[in-house]
Length: 346
Image 1 (tube, rainbow, N blue to C red):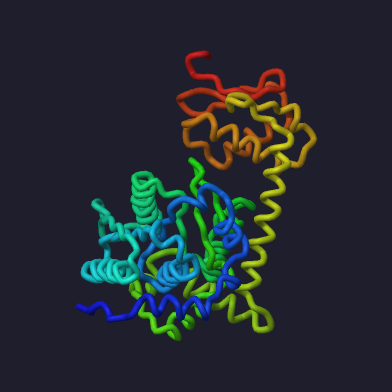
Image 2 (cartoon, helix red, strand yellow):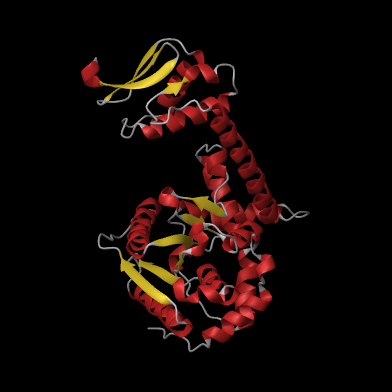
């Protein structure tokens, strides 16, 4: 079993900070972290797997925001899918945190099973994060996503037909329910830049062998599609281009959201949608307004993409409609207003 390398982690953190200064991090994240937002002033947590990206993130936060060290906690989740290697990851992460004087919290997947998919592992990991965030009253959760992750996510979401909201991921700052914030300061850096800086600073990190397999869609995108795509762009930086596109898509998405806010088609309690104010407006606005209304109704059944498009067409017309939303009830447009009526009212 490999032993945890003996590393002077405070020295490594300071050395890494000279190679990746604050000015190299995403500017909106730096401005937020130094600003007056309540989440920025509260406790911070780092999603810490022990890999290069999350290690670099933890070291940079420790070095660039020394005043935050006492309110910093690293969260490590063991998926229990790689046996001794997974346990070694946890020990490595605990050792780094002990050397830095950072609080460390670890969790393990009780329902782990061989062959678990990406979605299952992600749900289990985030359930652990949410429990720890709530229990510790943490305001911000930091992730080590970088430019390679942007390109991978973009290709994955194009494959499933995402709109601007999906294509704008991963965002440097993402507001969550209850005011928490997901923070990603490394989106301005490539994976190779991060690993080179870590190596020069004298750091060691954990490698997840499962990331090199073709078992998961993201891995296949990373090692096959993305590698070929980036290599084909011989006269341009494809990863930087994808990062720029993500920024522009996020700007457009924010503009459309602001336009819907200005129209204010949704009632304060979220029960009704005034489709009259949406008449003649671009379909993108109607789509967003309808999505907001559906979210506010709670469990409305498993509405398919085709079903959503049919309901969207009805909202655009604004005429009387009674549309089934599963066993709970119906979406009803009457006199220019969309409401949800339970099945009992029928």
